[in-house]
Length: 102
Length: 208
Image (tube, rainbow over all chains, first blue to last red; front, side, top):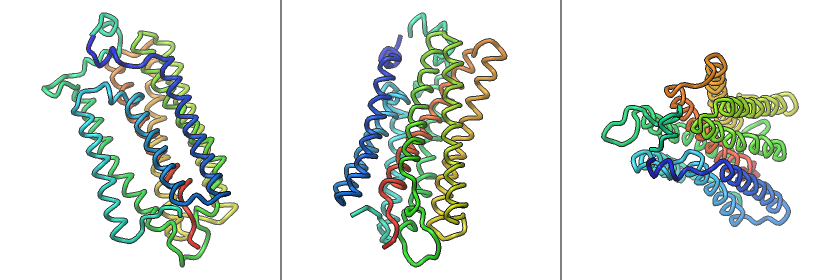
């Protein structure tokens, strides 16, 4: 067996990851309402983006098994994501339209 | 690779080239990587118009139903769990388990799509926000509509695999690889929704 397949999580671990994702989602929604009540502003935006990024990394790493693959798909995928974010941030900045609550 | 992996459908026996990864699988990763550009354009388009004032009609951010969308998001998130459990079951030679989890994934995807249809219907009938109401509404429907289309394509692929498995009594090694590729696609659709849920629903504000 290659290291790739030995390292795949077990079903029990998949359930734990799902529970973690559910908790993170609940926390995101809670933050939305906390912001509605308290007006956290930029802090809220930063926390929500961080939580989304964390969920993104968990799904890609564990459910898509990218952390168990060799470097090539990882490079393609990461490069695609980074290029897209960079390109559209430049576009939105140039148009003065980066929208963050606060 | 272990004996178990050799005997089971998901044995990753795709044509390996010098890359060390099967051609079909690498192709799927490259395709998904290119999809970032596609959805990035749609998300950027939404961000460009969502808080730009001066247009007539209802803005999407004024009428979002966050509790409802949160449940939809949870459903789609859990479909990633059932998808990976289907893959795991097939890896262990459990054809019945794989079939069950495949169907569960398709069903959760269908529930998500039903939620989206309900949301769009509410927006149109209750608030009069159609595709042509204003640029913000157009951008919203374009983004979430294309995502929904991706989910629908995923559901069709999942049901196709489920049907093949039912008809033939189990998925062959070739179809095992197909399941893995559909799984990658499905998880990708999920991560795009993670971004949409945060950026479009939770962070979006209507113009003041």
